[in-house]
Image (cartoon, rainbow, N blue to C red; front, side, top):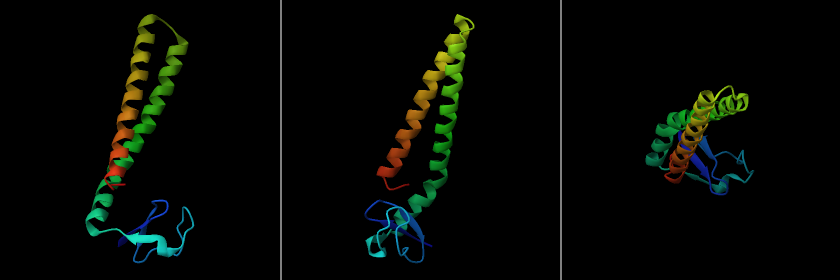
Length: 110
């Protein structure tokens, strides 16, 4: 199977030929270029890891929401301290995963 990249919006399609129209931006087939086997291998290889990073981002967002609730509940200073730490760590993990995904995109591994 070959991969094709839209030169206008960056959408990557899979198939023996480029699609007649880009599903994302609608440009015609002639705006697609075939991705090299080496670059296609990077994309396929990183697909699972990219999905895992996105799951981690979603979990960090959920952790942030839970921490906010705990801070608002304000049962006692010890509890608030734990929830504040959880909120800070959730932000840090989310940003790290987002930065990693950005790095993958910059290296053509997305």
